[in-house]
Amino acid sequence: MSRRPRRNHSPAFKAKVALAAVRGEKTMSELAEQFDVHPNQISTWRDQLLEGATEVFGGAEKPEAAVPTIDVKSLHAKIGELTLENDFLSGALGKAGLLPSAKR
Image (cartoon, rainbow, N blue to C red; front, top):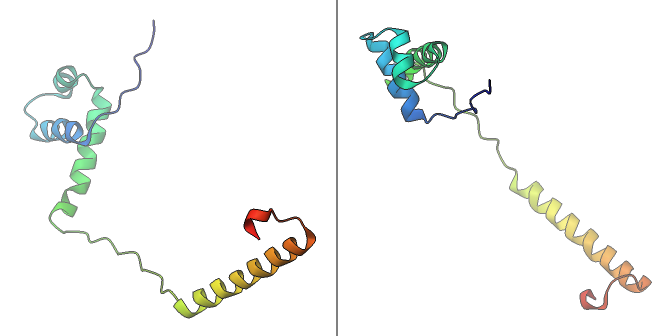
């Protein structure tokens, strides 16, 4: 007996199944047969829907991630430092004859 390949369901399909489960018009077995999904999966989707329902109406606000402040002066200083190092190293490689002629 071979197993069915793993399926990925769209969020719209999950919502449709979860809403049908929340309505309670049919049993889990009937829903599982109708949507061709295991009853445990339907229960999981229903629970996720009920947990996330408060977020739809602005209930539990998520704390926004603090944007780190960027120190532009230190970044410009680092760019200048790296540019100086690159110029020095390319000059040294050029004098040593290790730099291709196209980049001299």
